[in-house]
Image (cartoon, rainbow, N blue to C red; front, side, top):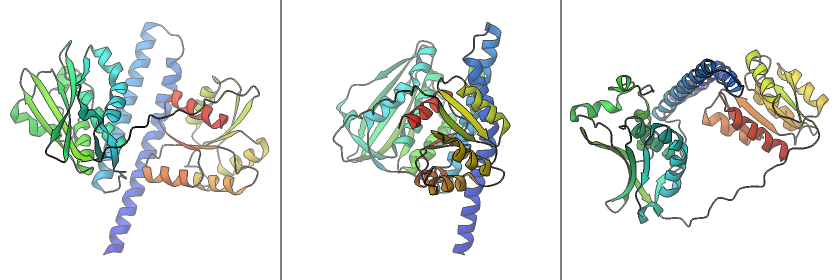
Length: 375
């Protein structure tokens, strides 16, 4: 019986990995080329077209991520690192990310002053921020013109802390509240012109419950709504601000990068991106064996490696690079549509320098490339 469960679990994991790869690979080309177009001068109509492509692509990527995350949690395969997380750190990070959306929407973000912000909860910081960002984004999008979003923290009993997100929107009728956490249920979102697929709240609640917490809702029609993330408090930690490392400077000489990638669109995309980076020469191989030969011949400063290659898995290419004394210390950035945490952890443990998931941000990719070349 246990063997059958393990086989089913393994099959589910492989399916998730495959689905992630097959959906993200074509989307990477769509968003990648759209980002390139976005950097070129164009007229108003063309600019609007590019903006629509980027918006639609990002919405589709968010939907893919949400579906996969929900599936991982339900399958018990989402890895959580439950640590002591200071509320002020998590909230500041979320507010920084949503500030541009609030500004465009004319919504004021207001954080209530309280010593409780210095308290800590037991949570996975990345997933806490993900859930909180979903709530704050909704509070902005479903607000009224010129409205506000207030973030506050409350003590609940001796061992519980709640982060509350209150909007000044139209509110939700009592009979509609149970439908909020139904997958793909968007209530009146279409009439209000709010983008999304109706999975944000479902995912937020799923993540918070996986961390041992709960999401509460209170709303009054015509006044607004308050969503609360309630988690177990944790022993407070001494605050140590993060220190940034030294910024690498671009080398004067030309640096060679070997790209091992079999998808023609993604090969062209990477070549187009790297043309915009002075001092970098990109050469490409569409097979693993050819890529290894190219690395031996070119002696590059960096390798960009896809995982799904026609002749051999990218993981074996990485292992071969690390086993060869000539390439053992060459930085290798995995660029893959497989975004499963298990795969990322495995490849990083086996010697990858960084892991970039498709579709990627062009700026983020270039920053990772610069860091690897400067190391």
